[in-house]
Each structure stands twice: as structure tokens, then as C-alpha cells.
Length: 78
Image 1 (cartoon, rainbow, N blue to C red):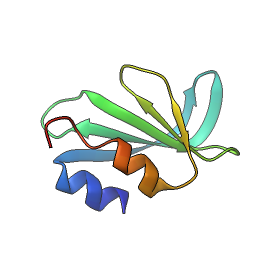
Image 2 (cartoon, rainbow, N blue to C red):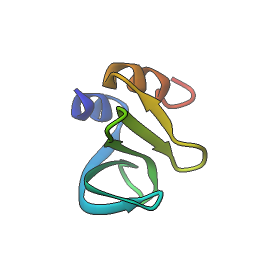
Image 3 (cartoon, rainbow, N blue to C red):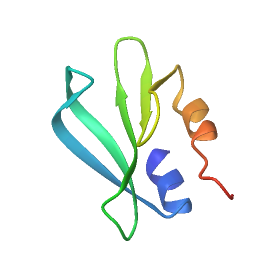
Image 4 (cartoon, rainbow, N blue to C red):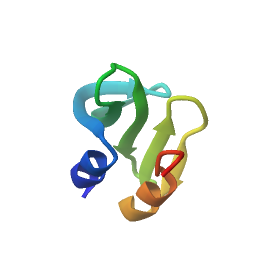
């Protein structure tokens, strides 16, 4: 679902392994990047509490479902 969403919004999805985010270690972290630049727009990972979404600028957010996170993450202007 996330890969199709990223493709539709012309973003590149990358899986980073063994990452530290906010002082905690995660085995996998998904990064959503602008297709033609190295700028990471969002980081996404699963924690014990749920799905965490961290925008490049801003506070991380907690979601129970990926669909809820994707609805909030629609790029501006679309």
C-alpha cells in the first residue's frame, strides 16, 4: 500500500536497516524521498505503540493504521 501511494505521489521509498530515531533503535525504517533529490520528506517506522511518522520538519505522529497516516501525508497542492 505504501509503495503504491509513494509511486502515485512521485516519491521514492527506501528501506533503511538498523536505524536510530529519537534515541531508539529500529530494525527497519521507511524513508520517503522526493524522486529526483536526496531530500527525505518522511520517516516511517512501527513501534510498540503503533505506526510512527516523522516529517522532515516537525513532530512525529502516532497512527493505528497506515491508511490514516497516508491520508495526513498527502503532499501539499494535491
